[in-house]
Every structure is written in C-alpha cells, then in structure tokens.
Length: 246
Image 1 (cartoon, one colour):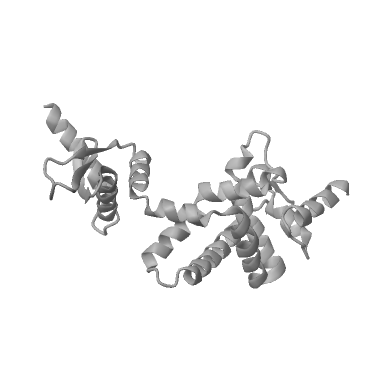
Image 2 (cartoon, one colour):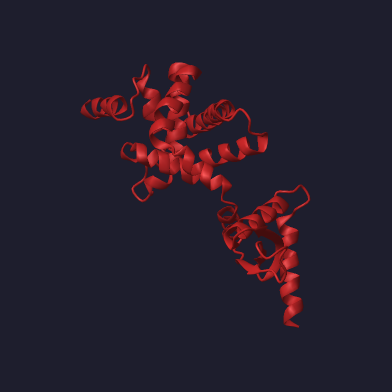
C-alpha cells in the first residue's frame, strides 16, 4: 500500500498527472524485460500501451508542427517530427522527466536507454484514461515546454554537415571534405564531399564552412532521392577500392 501511494504521489507531484485509472499508468512502467504471464496466457507488460502511445505521439507532434510552422513544406515537417520522436531523443526526454525512477525492469537492464518506451506507454495510458485533447495538452504544454528544446532541434535540422556525418557513421563510411581545384570567383570557396576518398558532391560558399554545408546538403539531397540505393552505393565503393588496389 505504501509503494502504491508513493507511485500515485509521483504521478501527481513529479509528472503532473492526476489519473482516473492509476492501474493503466502502473502497467505503462512495466517493461517487457520484467513481464510475466497470467494463467490465461496474457503477457503483463507495457508493449501494447507503447504501441498505442507511439501512434498518439506521432499524431500530436504532427498536429503541433503543422500549426507551429504554417509556411513550411511537408518535407520539413516530416524531418522535424522524425527528430522529435527519434528513439535517442525520446530516451533523453523521458530520462529528464525522471521516468527511469519508476520504470520496472530486470536488474541488468539499462533503464535510461529504454525510457522512451515508457514515455510512449505512459502517453498511451493517458489517452485511454483522459482522452485525446487532455493528452495533447499534457504533451505540448508540459512535456514540450519543459523538456524539448525546439530551437536546438531546428538548428540540427539546418546543420547539413552534421547530418551527413551521422549518415556516414551509420554505414561506417569515412566522410571528408577536400578543397576543389577550381573556384567560381576569388571570393567563393569550392569543396568536394568525399566518401571513402571518392567524390560524392560539390558545394560552394563564401567561406570554407559554408561550402562544406552546401556540399553536405547536395550529398543528402542525392541520398534522399528516389533512385538512390545504399546497397548499390556500397557495392560501388567496394568495386572502386578493389580496382584501385589492383
């Protein structure tokens, strides 16, 4: 009974939630690593609530961005939503909220790496408990206002070089930038973005930094094109390496 009261107090005082059905929230913090099976075969964990909460968060974030950026196109809105609901970002938000303190897992599970799952499950529980409008208000007025740095995410969205380097790290490719042999004029820099030593794109700018951003933007534009295949690209790089070593 004491632990149950402490949990309810944590919801109200730390997470600013006044539950109608507290059992939903208790289930939301029961990670699958600590799940158990009832006699009827039912698995007791937060996976179903996580599934529901994931969809609710997607809808609310899409709604928020649509209203917050009325002049931006679909591509920008989709990328911003992806950055907000990114697993690492949600884990960080949930950790800042303190969800790891009440998350039930196996002892050898690193709680801070799965907090995002609990946040999704908690939002799923809130949706069932209090409806969409109250859940939307909580997510935007409390979570967004206190735990999400939208300006930082906007900066990251416009940092093409960082995004290009992240792409390279994902596929274990070496990304470098090399001054191009030619320049448009004396005041403009020209650089080539290199992948494993092979030119992928070219960029120009009034500074070397701006030229690298432009080259990265052009590389990302190519990567995101409909005819780009990472498998074919990696095969191409492998053939280049094999050819040069002969």
